[in-house]
Image (cartoon, rainbow, N blue to C red; front, side, top):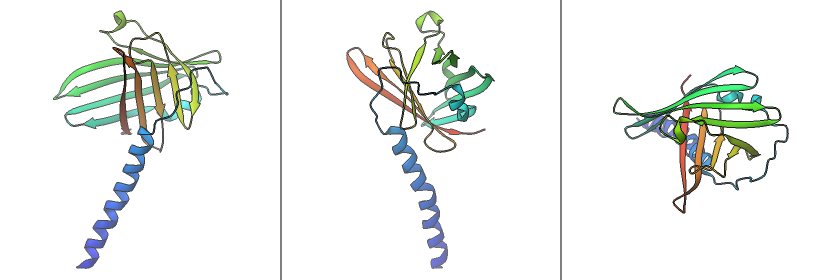
Length: 174
């Protein structure tokens, strides 16, 4: 009888410990680099991103779907579903232009539907940091792959004079 209880406790530890480490690694704040520091980072360093990623927060389900178009362009779609309705949608790109790397989102109802470029400004402790100081919000976008099949994305910056950040923690589903 004690054997099955021990197995359940071990199963909980097996699931819980990696989950706690994942959440901690996604929310660990780092200093954002403000000056370009490419150090040879290219689009190929984001190859782990290709695939479908899913995040669930209550009734809200978020997806990012990425594919490699060629050696200088990855394209993606991000969207949020609440109760079977798509409440947010964006087109995404990671673009290598010469030695510069950019993250480029386009949202239909923002910035007149025009793409906004965030320039790669540094790679710090596994985080790809992209910055556009002139954008209203966010000014910083961070992508991190702390463990296989986990994607942590964060948007942050100043909005209405107040610092804000929003974390998105995704699991790879295919």
